[in-house]
Amino acid sequence: MSLIRLAYASEATFEAKPLEKGVEPHVARILLVSRRNNAKVSVVGGLYYGDNRFFQYLEGEEEAVRATYQRIQQDPRHRNVRTLIEEPIAAPTFTNWSMKYVPASADVQAFLNRHKLADFNPMAFDSEQCEEMIDLIRRSSQDQKSVNYDETNRKTAPAPQTLSTGLKVGLISAAACLVVALVLVATML
Ligand SMILES: Cc1cc2nc3c(=O)[nH]c(=O)nc-3n(C[C@H](O)[C@H](O)[C@H](O)COP(=O)(O)O)c2cc1C
Image (cartoon, rainbow, N blue to C red):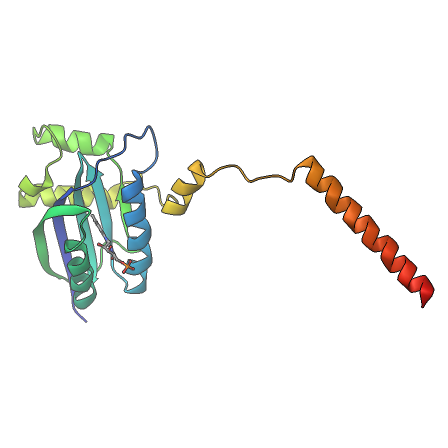
């Protein structure tokens, strides 16, 4: 059994929807699938999305991580996928997270300020910045674990239809007729 860790940076190809709160719908969909797939093969890690760029960290069995990364690299929702770290590790460090999500936060802003970076551009991170970013994701308590695509959909789904009064009256009349018919049949037997 050989464990590896892998970090990469990429640029989103979709137009981010401006949201006041919650997770960008494309990202929510990615998270939903990632959590389902990664849990099956014991891959763990975290995803950061900011300034329309991704930084993702993966850990797990070498074969599982490589297979996951191969699928990710071919995904048209991002481009310029650049591997930042790929190396063996002795023990997992992201236990219990199939894919932790960290939204743009004060922590990340402080990290950018500390390194005098104008925006979030993980392609240009040096190894120290990569490690800091991984640690930030690991420590973050901002994950919106429960957010998934179904929930995003539910917010915009129309309210459930209630039966109209006319239909209700019709149904009650039909039920009453059925009861009367049954009573009549019973008395004839
Ligand atoms: C930025 C980004 C991160 C992703 N992370 C993962 C991941 O951690 N695990 C995963 O299975 N798929 C991930 N995906 C989705 C894969 O590219 C691919 O769509 C998915 O694995 C297909 O799974 P399916 O065959 O079950 O639909 C990611 C995609 C993007 C764009």
